[in-house]
Length: 351
Ligand code: NCD
Ligand code: ZN
Image (cartoon, rainbow, N blue to C red; front, top):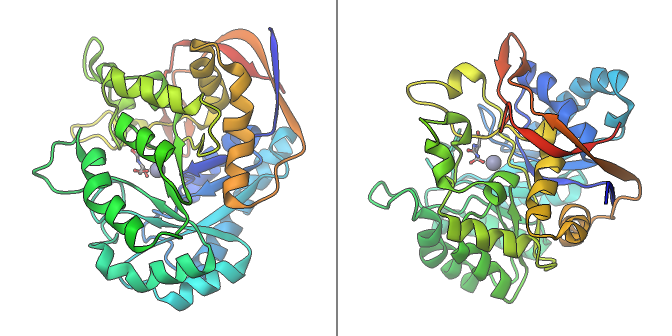
């Protein structure tokens, strides 16, 4: 098989940043995806519908030059999210639901990851907002890691399931939840076996790499992201979930651009930049287990079904054509290093 045609996929977890960084990266996602759930962890975070509306307008402005340069970028739709804080009012949730452009609310445990300081300090603090979300059907997107410094960084997702997620789901059984960027077999099993409205996104990097990639021949900061890469047993469980055909699992790149200098740093930022070659990376992962036939469900069908949005109707084609991921790309006045730079990939999105 030398070509692979799919209904145009969507990215259900994406960081687009703002200003020069936004202008540098938005075209990469627009070339590959019809829509993307845009994360709200800007500085300051996107906490209101008014902020989300203004951010959406900035994204569409930044997109215009990309569309002029490459027609494949046309029609990209940013699906906005709100950043949940201890002070999010139920009225803001209702406004979000009625807006037509806010499609979810993101829960970052305070301190869990990049720009999460304003995040949620306890589930008790956000009860009124969760009640409003449960009533209105607006999905809650969860960064599922505890932040307790005493819990080993490799265990924080599994501990979150037991101590936060499961109790919360007992209290809010009809709350629609996406467990974002899952990285463990515990999370994959939890979502696969759960009853009720819960799904999960899985990144390409967690399907392709296990934690030794961080240390291959030396420190590899471009493989550092949160939640951090786990052992091979977890990678295999994620690959099994993604390729299982279960509608509870769908594509979310968590492409999280940071400038080269801030990644290659004494205290490097967390985040892998995968937007430019996202579909090529996912194709490599699915092909590694002989499951390219399941890529369309994962990339193009399960996400819109969970979000209760129409499936896309146009298509994209990948061709089997070996190419090398560039060493770096322009990023405003700086450079950015895409994940797996310098490595060969077997599939390429055709123009
Ligand atoms: C993300 C970022 O840089 O915004 N980083 C990451 O490692 N994934 C934040 C996040 O999604 O956790
Ligand atoms: Zn993210």
